[in-house]
Length: 145
Image (cartoon, rainbow, N blue to C red; front, side, top):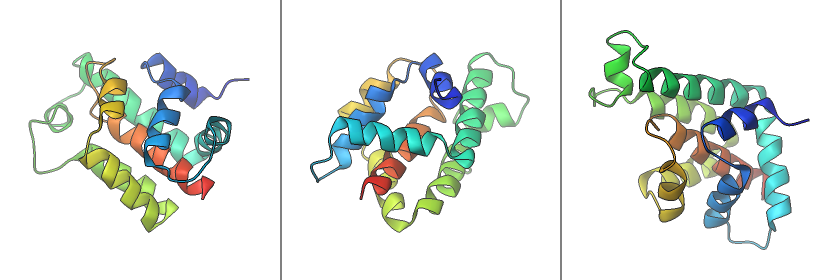
């Protein structure tokens, strides 16, 4: 049976192989793709991660379809630079995996590499999606260490 959170990500064009590539971008050991996939599935089974993915994806979808009221729509669409709701939520989730996970996450999100850019090119609204996949990749790497 497929993980419902993974299905939600797949509906937004994010495949597990994409998150594996992002995790491989960070790793320095010899973990293979099967080990990384198991770690990602483990992370996706955590209730806090499931709730975070669900909330973020739904907010992206609602933003895309202009279904959010103001001022939330303005905040999420990036017009309000004082409060980055997507980053606040991501930091709240990634902090539970420790300081090394925060470092990995910060690296991925601040230095948007070609792997991340390629993954995100599949959607029009990625306000939360970029942080979501960076949190999953960073947390799964911590589980591998």
